[in-house]
Amino acid sequence: MPEQKTIGFLFIEGFADWEYGLLAASATEWFGARAVSLTPDGKPVKGISGFRLSPDRSTSADENGDLDAVAVIGSDTWAGDAPPDVTELLGAVASRGGVVGGICAGTLALARAGMFEKARHTSNGRDWINGHEAGYAGDGNYQDVPHAVADGRIVSAPGSAPGTFALAFLKTLYPERSGDIAHMRTLFAKEYGEAS
Image (cartoon, rainbow, N blue to C red; front, side, top):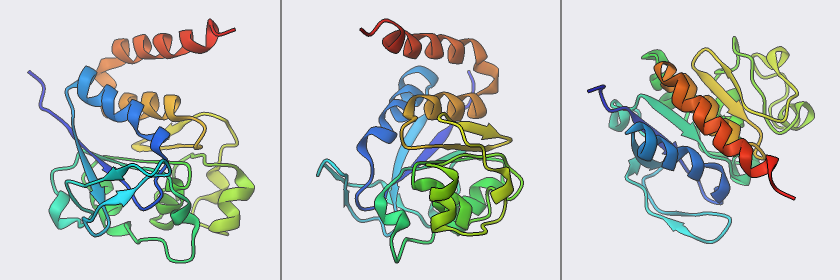
């Protein structure tokens, strides 16, 4: 039996409720992953919906040595005046070959941590990401597309693409499960293909 992988989901105040559910549920239900919730100080945060999330742990790199991957979930707070600094955690996961992903404004945390320096990536728009992190390392690698982009072990997506974010993240974390990923893609596509 393959070893269970652990994915950290990083939430901050005002997190976007729609950006993590598909990935978290698919990873645990279909791929047997263990999902853990993280906040910068280990304290509860509220999503845009007002739902309160009580995390499993903080974002301290020392506390998260077991993570095989981390997904940074969007929030307007990432684009605010004093966003949390999670560079140490993202760097620690990346340095041991883990998957580092960000969706929506969560991509700003990856940009600040230098994760895009050598990786093709996307976000909420070229002007949007440059408006918040002008001249970030790797800005020339930006891909202006409406879906997730995976390059090496780095995955990014605009906030409007939680479906392809889940697919790209899982494909990167589980390259040997391409058949299951293809099945998921077909399943997700049917919703839109058959909607009137």
